[in-house]
Length: 377
Image (tube, rainbow, N blue to C red; front, side):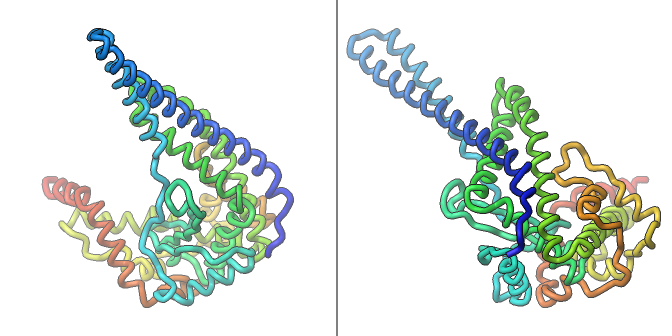
């Protein structure tokens, strides 16, 4: 197992503990409020029967009103408290479907002293993430799911993909073990409850919005500290130079996709009622044909590195991550076969069909509106 630095259990551990205790207190308070209203509802129900037995109609009517109000308040608190946990997203990838990918994930897991994960999922995002959740939603044995973006696998080489996996398993190794995993679960649960309260709280919604806004900066700070710690631990396994190169590669490819590839896909909406290409099916070819690797010191590279993160961005700026790793900005000099070609080649047509279909269902109204506007123009 990779040695864990003391810093990984220092600043972020104290902040995580404080936020976890705060989340536990908030959830407990809401549960007690729900229980209190339920007890008041039960008491008012018994009072109603007593008033009816005594013939006090007005007293019974008042008790019924109290019963309904208390029951409604208790149910509302329970609805808030039952905010459903996040579920794995994307297409499930069983071991038999991608044995080479699962073998690589198992090797990285063993390197970090982690057991095999419970599920691997392919998503349509330019991202990779570990999701931990109790098996039965809110309670039960903790399960771990790895979600890998198909665009991400088209963007990086096999070695760079290994660096991404090392970063994700570093999160598990230093931040999601034992009680720390449950602390993360409670924090996420509390934020979901606050979000639901703010959306359906009626007159209390502004209060819950204020409460959530007060808690958000600490959550952002914790997330950024965890990213730095995961980078440090992953660099001990795969090397700081490879990890820094991978971070830059992802940033460059993400900008290419958002500012070039997807814009050209959507530009067809001015000429035809349906796209002539399937963007996810052609993404690998688009990467090879359209992406131009910048030279060291080029303005495009400097602009990617110098991008400022939003104050509410849960990831630190790229420049700060490279500085923390102690590496200078470096771009891979050659284009190597992608991780998608190495690990997902037989599945790429099927995966692309799923995500192309989902993309078209989500985009078709906008596409047809743009086409109609261009025809009128």
